Amino acid sequence: MRLAGKVAIITGGAGGIGFAAAETFAREGAKVAIADYDTGVGEAKVSELQNKNFEVAFLQVDVSDRNSVDTMVQRVLDYFGDIDILVNNAGITRDAMLSKMSVDDFQKVLDVNLSGVFHCTQAVLPTLVAKGSGRIINTSSVSGVYGNIGQTNYAATKAGVVGMTKTWAKELGRKGITVNAVAPGFIATGMTAKVPEKVLEQMKKMVPLGSLGEPADIANAYLFLASNEAKYVNGTTLHVDGGIMM
Ligand code: NAI
Picture 1 (spheres, rainbow, N blue to C red):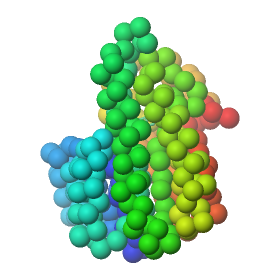
Picture 2 (cartoon, rainbow, N blue to C red):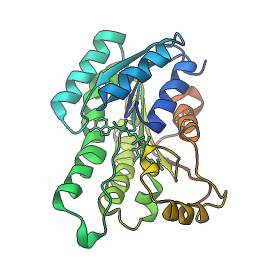
Picture 3 (spheres, rainbow, N blue to C red):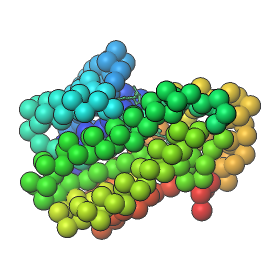
Picture 4 (cartoon, protein in one colour):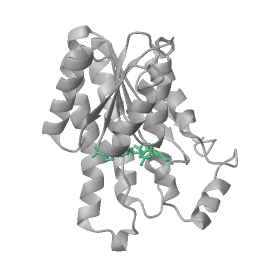
């Protein structure tokens, strides 16, 4: 049990990668708060894990809304009594070429993918600082490091996440808190299901391993960074992308 007794919040925990992470963390002994916008899917999925006798709870949250985040964090503290790990995994895409991207779609992606990470991290910070320990794990993307056609907004946020990760690693290291990021490549989830088949084939050609990744591949990277095995890993971005970035 690599996370025995730890309390973890996983934002976007009802989605493809987030749910795989919730199950992985729970299997390793963590109490998991699945914090997601999507109540219908989220609550059903939580029941699935509770039926396996895992300690999980569903918390409805809009990470782009600070009041909603503060309420969610307080509810986690009320329910589980503590917070050790935050996985900032919630994310959205609103893809369009630069010439066609609306200001609303640009802003919406920033609000969720960038401000959402800021809100959640700031909201859990007092608890982690008071304990003198904690783990923050942010979700970047190959798009943020490499760029990707049609993803001005998304790439900006995912590059921004790397900048925040490094800054917080420097600010919080001496408080016993590590901050790292995972940069997934192309992973088979609802997010990539929206990509046309022809584009998916092109994407696969970019991957030295020749296939899309699975949600569990990212969940296992989150698990490593959350575990004691990664206690001296700080400020890094772990690329889990089949070898696209090297
Ligand atoms: P997904 O679409 O399956 O799951 C995302 C989850 O975030 C959904 O459950 C959704 O309800 C939730 N969410 C969206 N807006 C929210 C909000 N305002 N507040 C709270 N929750 C919200 O996507 P997937 O693939 O599981 O992505 C997880 C993370 O991995 C995201 O940050 C994504 O950008 C990143 N990623 C995914 C890649 C992929 O190929 N699937 C590649 C690189 C990064």
